[in-house]
Image (cartoon, rainbow, N blue to C red; front, top):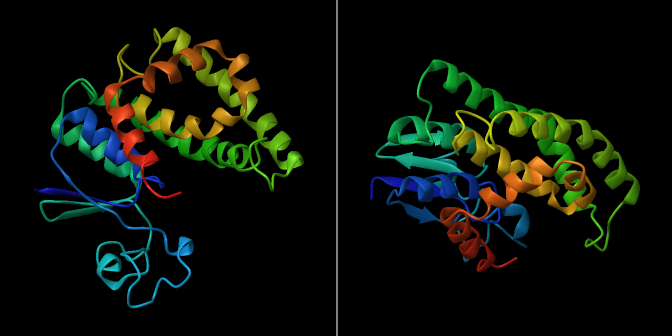
Length: 218
């Protein structure tokens, strides 16, 4: 197979793997676990991890995911999804420069405006034993106006972010918003976001990716 995707699914590798499944690509999944999840990542019998020399040769930053596409190595999850969309085409890819700009804009918006707070909300939700309720509340307060922005854009875009169809922009933003699904009150105030995330997560490619993720060790 020409395309290899490195990273366990309990990481941001969900993003390129979902994308590859949407595109119908054949690929080799190379599980690379985060070193912090291992008692001794340097042990002789340790599984392939983010400190393993063979993986550091792929990504010297020691982060997953990474891809090797027929000798072309690329790191950073959203760079990978945007690259796969542009290379392989189809309805998920931009039709012109304006769509390309919008898809990049929404991807960067999710990464810079939403992801950190959404992660804090998830890590401190009611289902977490060691939660910090103050951190959860602060994250929710910060996310509320972001969800309002997203809700308005989805309403105006016919339920999608770009081109009135599901694209890489929806995939990327949905993978960030997924972290915030622990904060149910945010979705109650943003019905278009709720309908959109439900539709995104109902797609066969997402379900296939998540089934594989759920089969991985926690």
